[in-house]
Length: 304
Ligand SMILES: [Zn+2]
Image (cartoon, rainbow, N blue to C red; front, side, top):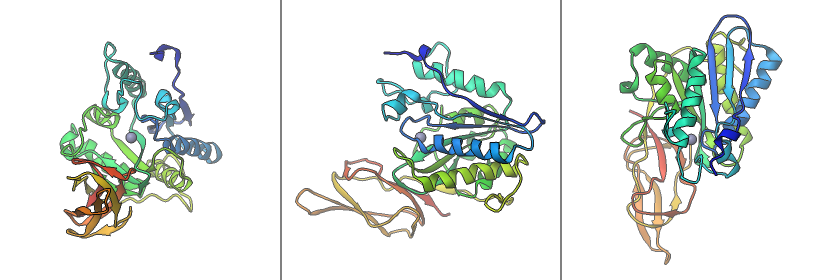
């Protein structure tokens, strides 16, 4: 049943009442990516304790309540991905209507930055994802995105629309509207990994500190220099079906040509060896052992 009218999306606000930057945090837009919700809780607890020097922090801590209840990425049984529905449409599908409400609510506050919190494969390292240069309406928006992403202190990775459709994501739509937005992939989906929560909280507080909204502390001291993004790739894809066994782990540095994984048949014969196409770092590896031809099984940050 499409009972969206009956549902409420929780909103949090920490307002210093002193003029300054406006930042939005959004979490759990994919209903099974739950660590972002805990990160928002932790950030707000920290702001309550230590205070906000200026500006305001708004948050949607749990955007996709329907997906959360069903332990699903999607918002409904039509398998509509809310993060492909932005900036949305008041007369559109359920996802587009919801996206429009979220987008308009965020834009009405004239934000300086939107941080969208996601989770990746269960076996993955945290990284911050930014859109490629051609997405930005002006070089200034691109520079401010790189500043915010660099301030997180986590691995900076530039997404590519060769591998993913980037249009219609929340961060993409916000950026196209001229507002900086970044996506933090804070470790694995499904369950809350406390280490990832600490890393995600530190990343967000580091960004707030870089914007002058909170004081520097022993654990939070954001970097000032701009980082150069590594390039995202999901290559090589599988070309056979079978059972995959990885020879590398998330966070591991890899060399072009290095063995990444082998695919075995049910009889145990070696069907395929997947080798690195570039030098870089492993960001994450597939959750399931069963693979099929064309399947994406690994995420890599290419070191150019
Ligand atoms: Zn996601």
